[in-house]
Length: 274
Image (cartoon, one colour):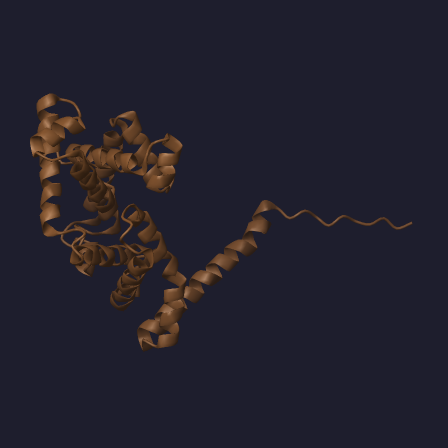
């Protein structure tokens, strides 16, 4: 009687190999698609690339938490974000070896913010009030040697709780982690030129050392945050959760999470500017 021989088990390395090959093949195909588009600027290649990165627009709009303002339509904002995505495609230089997602992020987000400013959601007057809040918060913290309360901030600015909450909301949706803009290669929110991607006047080693020092300062700043603010920062930036999801976990409102996020960013920014 013949005995059946069991097939040899695949090693973990052998199992991973086909997946790695598929990933490599997809990367090569995407690069070839980009090369074809940049060489010919044809509509077919453009549509394929837009389809590939459409998720980025949806992701950015959802992360901006527009749902807190009922009058703003999410689909309208995604359409505006898509315009930013197209502009990023037109400006993108494949030879720079920068990921398109990194480059496009600022264009998409910038397009949405520009739209919000145009419809006066982020009016110049309101942005001035945000600056006043930053100044008041830092002055009170310096004077009191602790985080100021809402009552103390309202008293210094001469505003009510509703307006303060709106300021918290605006700042929560305009702030990014202080290191985020540097790691993406941008000096400010609205600068999307290639020239900001790298400072050619500085040796690469010096740039690397500066970035490592910034990471250290940022980590120390986060460690010194009050527990609730630290939790918000961790869940938002590292676990990629929305303010609403964080609110559900902490059993507080979404606006309260915005407030904690804003205070955390103010504290981190103050520490990093010392």
